[in-house]
Length: 99
Image (cartoon, rainbow, N blue to C red; front, side, top):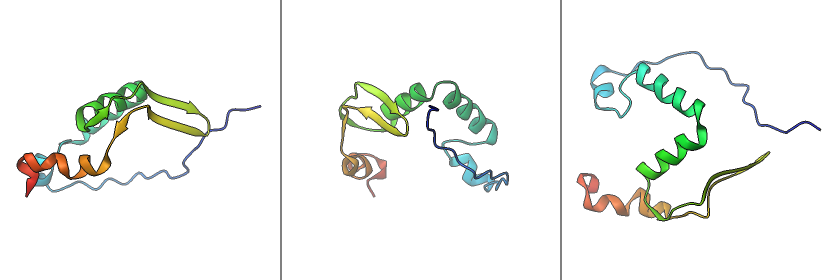
């Protein structure tokens, strides 16, 4: 019995370069930075997403396991507690993003 996986058949090759001013203010400023980030994600997907989730989101309870993968089912950040409304809105009320 083969292991079931999910595959994408979409293979997009076009590149749409942003205006220079937009790129300068972006989190990822160039295609080189993107490729470096992509390589990190490829090398260690669970470590990559765990690091990003820790850095970019507020957790009310940190997860115990980053990924529980039982194809075709995936559970991310198992046992973690998060509030999406808080992450999208409330936490920014005390920062420069409040307005």
